[in-house]
Every structure is written in structure tokens, then in C-alpha cells.
Length: 160
Image (cartoon, rainbow, N blue to C red; front, side):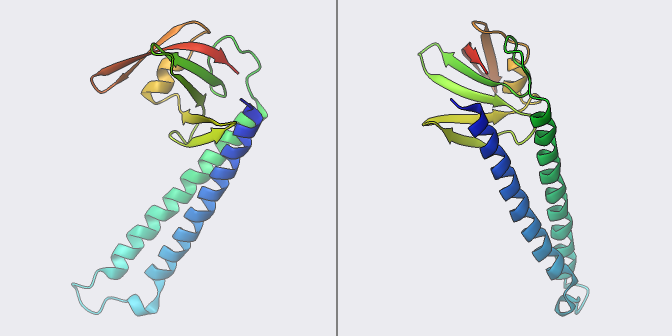
């Protein structure tokens, strides 16, 4: 699996998400500040609700920018060693049934999924249960992931 292609796709997705969030924030801001939306009585809360939405959308834009910044810092200092799983590694796992799972341990944007070279890759962060379990693992080491009342076991097959 080509890690460079994955990193390019992550960057593209984050930029696209930022663009969508920015457009939504502008629409919410314009709605909140439109003269036609001035309250006509004390029960007319449309403008107030629109201002709450605009604030939330602005926070989303800030989060998107933080995600992009986190990946830019990661790109500038990608891990070279491939013995132990750290942020920036693409990890291939295998469960006890022989099913293979590809996981990228990223600094942000956990949950994003990509199809690279015909294989699914999911981003997990170090703060997630999955990412926390992967950190510091070595090849051929077993990883146990606790999700609600279930435990899933994986073997680390490769680290890139």
C-alpha cells in the first residue's frame, strides 16, 4: 500500500472539509446578520438561533484548520523508524480469523476512511481506544482493542 498516496488523499479530504465548513459558516453568518431576520417580537428567536449556528460553524472551521495544521506538522517530521507504532505510521493488522485491517495512526481526523490500492484504510488517533492500544506496539505483537463490552484481538503484521 502506498503511504504517500494515502497522505495526499488525507490532505485533499481535509482541505475539502475546510472549504465546506467555511461555506456553511458564511451562510450561517449571513443569515444571522440579515436585516430581514430581526426579531419581530419576544418569541421570534430565528436570528438568535442563527447566531448560535454561526458560532458553531465558526468553531468547526477552526477545528478543520487545526486538523490541517496537525497533518502539516506530521508531514514535516514523518517517523523514519518502523519498529514501534507511533503517530504517522500505517499499520497492517490481522485478526484471528485472518482478516486484514489497515489503520493509519494520525494526529487528527479520526474516523476518516479511504480506499487505497483496493484496500480500506481508516484513520485512528492516539486518543481513541484503538489508537491508544496501537501506540508503542511492535511487529508480531498482539493488540487487544476494548470496545464497549467486546475485546478484539489483532496481530501487528507490518508498520510503514
